[in-house]
Image (tube, rainbow, N blue to C red; front, top):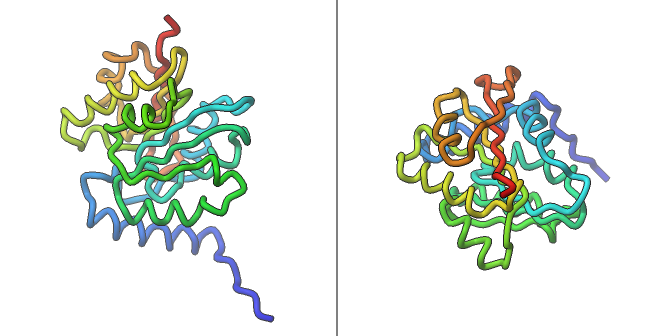
Length: 205
C-alpha cells in the first residue's frame, strides 16, 4: 500500500498563495490582499475569543479558511460557527474541509453577503452573536456596503459581544468607533503585509 506524502509547510503555503492569487484576480474587490493571511495573524485573532464556554460565532469573508482553522480547533464543542463567504469557490473549499471535521455539525458555510448577517441570524433564531470575526477589505469595498456591514454586525452582536476585524492600516478605525465606541488595537508584524487587528465590543447596556 502506498502513502501520499503530506506537503511541508513551505510547499503548502506556496500552493495556498497561487490559489489565492488566482482567486484574487477573479474577485479583486472581495479580497483584502493578493496574499493569504499568516498563522500569526490567525492566532492573534483567535486569542481575542474566550473559548471557555459555548459561543455563537460568525466569520465574514473567511476566504480559504486561514483565520478559521484556529477558531475551529479551539472552540467549545457546543459552539456554533457561521462562515459567510461570497466567493463560491471558497465556499466549496470550506465545505469540503469542515463537513467531515469532528465539529462539522456546528459549522455552517453560507454563500451569501456579509451584509445579510442579520437575516442569517434571524433565520436561525440566533438572538445575539458572541463574536463576529472579519477579514473583509472595508477600505476597498463601496462605502455604503462597508457602513452597512458594520451597522449590521453591531445589531447582531449581543450586549458585550465583540467584533474582531483585521485591516492593513488604521484608516477604518474611526468609522468603527463611530458605531461601537473605543477600539482596541493589536499589531501583527509577521504577516504579508503587517496587519492591525481591531477589537470593538458592543456596550453592555
